[in-house]
Structure formats: structure tokens, C-alpha cells
Image 1 (cartoon, rainbow, N blue to C red):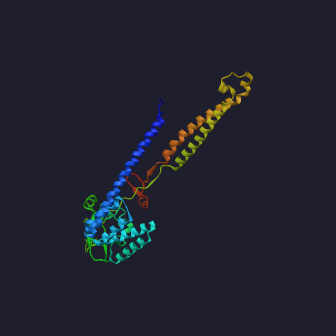
Image 2 (image 1 turned 135 degrees about the vertical axis):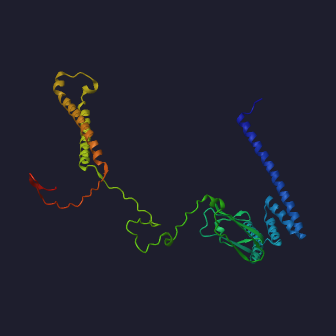
Image 3 (image 1 turned 180 degrees about the vertical axis):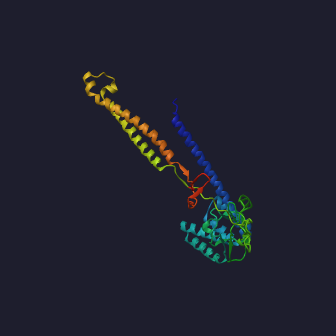
Amino acid sequence: MTSLPMQHLGRLLALAMFLAALVGGGRDARADTAAAQALFDAARQLMAQGKYADACPKLEESQRLDPGIGTQFNLAACYEQIGRTASAWSTFLDVAGAAKAAGQAEREKVARQRATALEPRLIRLTITAPADAPADLQVKRDGAPVGRAQWGTPVPLDPGKHTIEASAAGRTPFVKAVELTRAGASETVAIPPLPASAAARAATPPASTTAPPVSAAVAPRAAAPPASGAAFAPVAGRAPAPPAEPLTRRRSKGMMVTGIVLTSIGTVALIGGALAIASACSGPGCESGEELDPFEEEFGYAEEDSEMDAGYALVIGGLVFAGVGIPLAIIGGRKVPVQVERKAASAPAPPPELVIGPRYAGLRWSM
């Protein structure tokens, strides 16, 4: 007895599962269709008895289980009987669109006529919001979100009580209930600017207190100046002048410039010395360590030794120049306060004075 390969066995198992799901799905679909038909029949009986309020929920469930143009048409007629004019109007328009797609011209015509007849009785509600409304403002009508595109647009609604809500982060929510009863009327709900919530006000620091008026802040001037030697009373409301920034200057511009020049010369000497040293050791004996011929050593590479010596001299000289120039540039460029010297007015020197004593005589003068 031959056995099937595992690959074929897996395919057969998958096919069996698909067929089982298909059969089960078909049974569920048939069950939904049967339930939808039973609900439709029960709703038609209730409508014949005038019990439209009980018939509409059954038609809604029948349409959900097994959508059909006939069920939708009866649902629109049921809505019209219980006064839900906006729902009936929109459902008749849906029936007209479905009937047109199905090629049922007569049913489309009747549905559009019924919708047109309902238009004068529609109640429209317009919701407006401030022009400077926050970006996160959310508006709801009867718990359902109202997009910004609907703001300012009259929207047909069923008669009855409707609740309008508006909310935003950090703002106090707005809630208003409106009662729509008059057929053909248009109502407007204007959402006001939402004030800050208590939590947002508590988190906001208090504003600074305003300054007192100038007339009250400045003390009145005395009629006569105070006597000599008396202290002047400070005038209220005048802030003291800020202290003047001290004047500064470079300690020595000549020293700073000399330091910069010496540092530049030292840098150039360092670079030149490094290049001379690097280029001096470029022969074959430098890298390989091979011994040179005495003739080559004496005459061929004498120039390399001189170049290397010159490179070392440049490096040493560059270090000396930089070592002297950097401190000079730092010390000379440091800023120091300017000492303001006041020269007293020079009085004319007194003339020489002739001094005659008992035993001497002479001239005395002051410098």
C-alpha cells in the first residue's frame, strides 16, 4: 500500500478546511437571510396596524442582516410616519441611488419624489465656531464628532432634542441642548470662545502688578530749595542710573604686536625645520640601514647632513621665538583699567623773596 507524500496530504487538509468554512459560511448567510425575511414580514404587519414605532427597529435589523432596496424603501416610509423627517429624506435618496444602479427606474422615480416632498419640512441646524478657535477644538452633536467642514453649514436633523458639545485642551467645555420642533425651521448654535479651565488658570503664574500712576509715584517738589548743609530727600519713583562701565586699554600694543610677530616667525621656522629634517633623510641608507660606500658617504651625502643640521637649527630657533612671542602677545594684549589722572590747575610760582638775616642774606623761592 502506497502512502501519499506529506506535501499532497497538507494540500488535501487545506482544501477540506476551506470547503468546511465555505459550507459553514453559506449556512450562516442563509440563516441571516431567513432572519431578515422574518423581521421584514413582522415589520410589514406592524405597519399595517399603524405601529410604526415598533416596525422601524425591525426593518433596521432586517436591512443590516440582508440589505435590499425594498427593505430600505419601507424603512424610509416608516421613518416618515414617526416624524423622523431627516432620516426619511436621506434614506429615500439612498434608495433612489441604489435603484438607479440596479436599473429600477420606476422605484428611483418614486423615491426621489418622496424625498422632494419632505424637503420643505426639514429642520436644519447650523453650528458655528469662533474664527480664532483653537486648533484642537472638538465639536460633537449627540455624541458624534462634527468635522470642521460641517461648521457653518445647515445640516438636516430629525425633530427632537439635540446636544451640542465643544471642548479643547486647557479650556472649559461648552454644552448646549436645543429642541427642534418647528418643521422647516433653521436653528443656529454659536460656540463661544472657551475660557481657560480652573486647572489651566492655577498653572498660569499671576500677572505682575501694574505700576502706580506717575502723579502718585513722584513726590511733590518743595517750594524753596533746602538750606545749605541740609540733606536732599530722595525722589521716589526714579531708578538709580546704572554704573558706568570702567574704561580699559591694552597693556602694551607694542608688546602685543612684537609677540605676534615673534610667534609667527617661530611657527614658520618650526615648519621649515621639520621639512628640512624630513627631506634630509631621503637616501637609500636612511631607510634600509645599509652601509654606504666611503666615497658616497663623504661626497654624495654631505649635503644631507648640512640640511639636517639646518633643520635642527630652524626648529630650535622656532621654539625660542615662539617661547618668547607667545608670552609677550598674551601680556601685551591683556586689558587693564584706565587710570584717569586729574591735573590740578597750576598756580603761578611766587617771585623770589629776598631774605636778610643778622649774619646772612640770600634769595628764597618756591618751585
